[in-house]
Image (tube, rainbow, N blue to C red; front, top):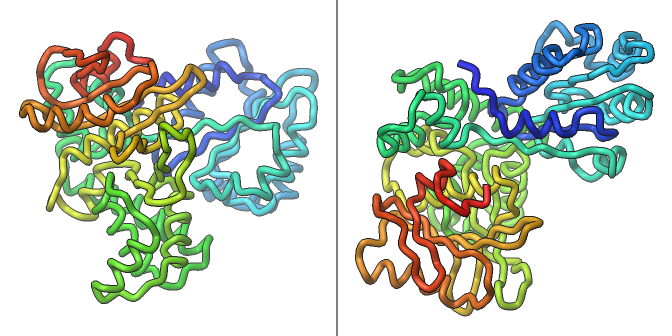
Amino acid sequence: MVIRRTEYLNKLIAFREKKLIKIITGIRRCGKSTLLEIYQDWLLENGVKKEQIIAINFEDIDYEELCDYKKLYTYLKERLVQDEMTYIFLDEVQNIENFPKVVDSLFIKKNVDMYITGSNAYMLSSEIATLISGRYVQIEMLPLSFKEYIESTGNMNERGIKYTEYLEASSFPYTLELKGQPEEIRDYLEGIYNTIVVKDIVQRKRITDMMMLKSVLRFVFDNIGNPLSSKKIADTMTSGGRKIDAKTVEKYLESLSESYIIYQAKRYNIKGKQYLKTLEKYYVVDIGLRYMLLGKRQMDMGHILENVIYLELLRRGYDVYVGKVDSFEVDFVAQNNMGTTYFQVALTVREEQTLERELRPLKAIHDHYPKFLLTLDEDPEVQYAGIRRINARDWLLGLTEGNHN
């Protein structure tokens, strides 16, 4: 089953033939290669000839000899079409040493439109970014949104059941093919997890203690939505009998973030309008991965919902922070070029006390930006002093008015 990933496809179409290198990043198996194929089909349907498209996937052994950057450059240069645009697609390009030299040399030629993908933010690390600085646009891809998942089922019915399915069966696109086969899904997710840990982290970062790296990842998965610091993680793990220092934890967290398996949300002081350096929160790229690693024990469904909302805000193009106002915490401060939106997330607020507790941080903010309280309560929308309480699933599906989609 191919999902068209329309919002990402539209971005590629919008940047078509603009003098920029299009870099699509995101965790392994989130659909980057499929997106490139869909886009190539779109180009062919819109008048581009087959010989104008050169596509190489560096995970395909057929192209192994092109892993030498000079051979790759020669191969591509020989295939450029005279006096017409050539579209070049290089998939999983981080497997090529010195790939920026190839990309840069081709980019400066006339009539070249270049698209590259990678599963590791190392690709955009400082030395590479310097070489192609100011010449690229990054499109960050995530696995399927709840909206994409529910569209794959053919209708909008039984949203509650489908939301649970979406969490448990994972948001990686290929898991749709394995629907109703929990064992196969588990094996598939385990494969992704091991590849990321081994290929993208252990080999690249030359990490010697793989077990400790996995322990740190498990700890973060177990504490999504909780304020964490490297020191706090190191202290907790050391007191549990696994000796590790804060510097090593920091290195591991950076590597895990670079491979897009976890995302860090920094804290932001709303009144002082400044970023805070301590106690970030972490969210996981896919809840199915968390289930695979930890089982369903001690599931805090409120934090799981928070995780889903956080990823959706990233999909919608926001920079997302955890807000601090006086002694209160606002779950998300979401900023884009249109301004700021505040979000509080709770599983249910049907008890008066809980409702009051969740509204308090939002009431403490005295600017005029939109404020939302998102819950899974199946109740009609209510407003409290300008704060809109709406159903989180409706918000995820873009069904609420003023949704800032």
